[in-house]
Length: 131
Image (cartoon, rainbow, N blue to C red; front, side, top):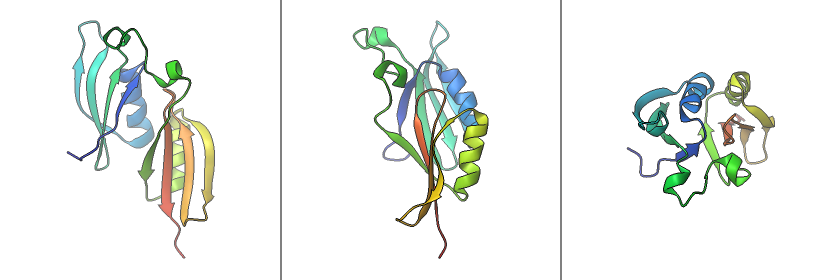
């Protein structure tokens, strides 16, 4: 396990898992269901990276929802180094992500793009530009 693993909360963890499979080729490692059908914990693997996720449980957080929709957006970007930025971006958008920044060559030396997934999380994709 990596030292830091993102653990996100969503309003539809089961749907997010299916989206991440389609958009990023994620593999579901494990899922722990709550008795009411929500997902208490899940782990997916994208390449050699892990992502933990769960459904939101406001009843365990002082009645406050903590999804990107409840918070009015997300304060972070989930970043992926990929072999083909354009292909990764197009696959995510084709799976239902909303384009945020189309692929472009950046001054720092990467081809870079951003998209927002249907659950409100921002993702970035980068590929070093060969010179």
